[in-house]
Length: 82
Image (cartoon, rainbow, N blue to C red; front, side, top):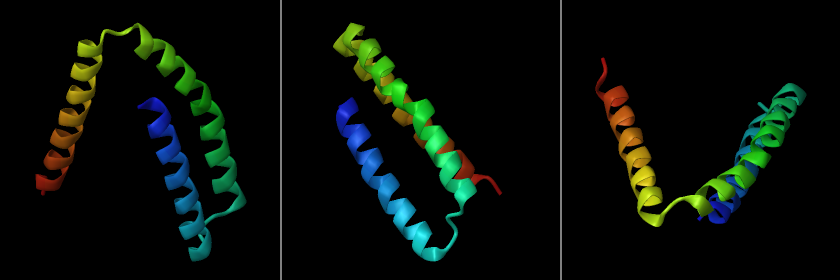
């Protein structure tokens, strides 16, 4: 699952760079910032893999469900806020 998420993130990132590049909003500063974020986030995949392999499947499932529900609640609350 983590590898799939990483692959999807790469594809989405490439699509975003292409779209924003064609729109003319990608500057050298934006690219530098994106690369910096990528360099910092890259080791996180290895930490996540080590973390997930030590978690029982049930705990991992509960954590994922909680994150999805929390994200949904935050999006709904932002949408309903005047």
